Length: 247
Image (cartoon, rainbow, N blue to C red; front, side, top):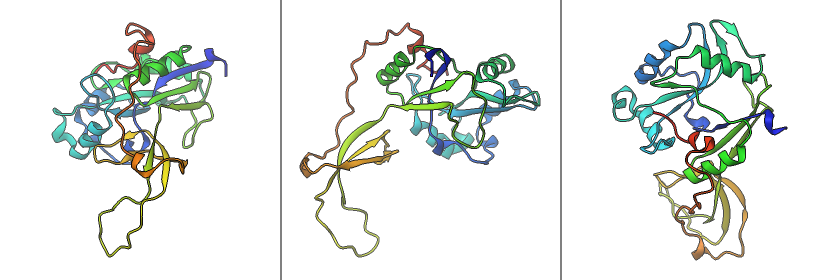
């Protein structure tokens, strides 16, 4: 794809937090109120986001908010990132190119508060990805600006570029016993790619890389997050500004 045909956006949150046919209206009163600024008869594609004090999407905070519902709206406010428009004013937009859909979305949705149409960048995708690494974000999404909306399936015109980590792990650590077990020696070491560690000590999106016979079991320990050398992207650049969510 030619670089000037790509629209690069941040990837905010994974699919496991997107409610599937679940009505969460009562749980998100701040987002419901913001929906009054959307024209009636509209279908907007987007994601819920909670942020940390530095304006970065925070998966753990969003999970706590969805579990706590409206009672936690003051403690953990959320916003809706409107990425795309399928219908506006009851008019279908699915076959229109992405650039036109996004332009109409910006004009139709009154920005501010708890609904937000994020910016994008059309050329400096590498710089934006580097800014994501520096900020500890999950990655970017590249979309062809002439692409239609493809519902119900992965679009060949959209590409996720994720910032993944990799570590070595020992197979068969002692589990919580719910019935008699036969203990085995933890001798196999495997390499695993993943998105991040969750607070409960589990991995998000683990992917098996392969066996590591050259690594001793004692070397498979949890490492501190790798330090990303900052300074490659200046804070006043458009790419860096895209990594800050204004709510």
